[in-house]
Length: 97
Image (cartoon, rainbow, N blue to C red; front, side):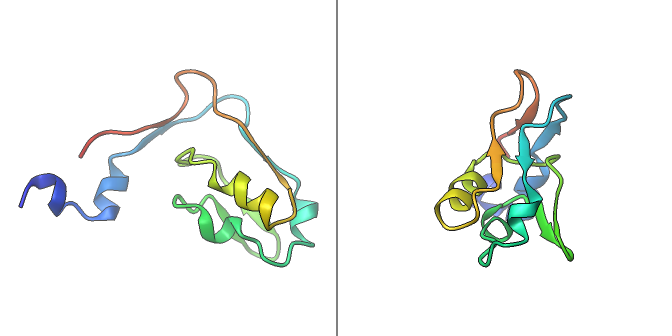
């Protein structure tokens, strides 16, 4: 078994680094989230950027930039998420593990 095959998902995710951008690249209209029945962003994000604690909370640090939250929010959610890539040199950096 190679080293790559023996790494667990948690260990692979630990190899991912994130450089914060000065400007937010994800903006959420949390008022729309209050009326969203399915809240798909809570389930689709592999980095668990979104959490529900009486209201939607989100922290973009650690976002893996899949864009999945934007897609599900606009297809089956309330359309509350605005998402764009961070500025050059910012955001997620993947390292082969």
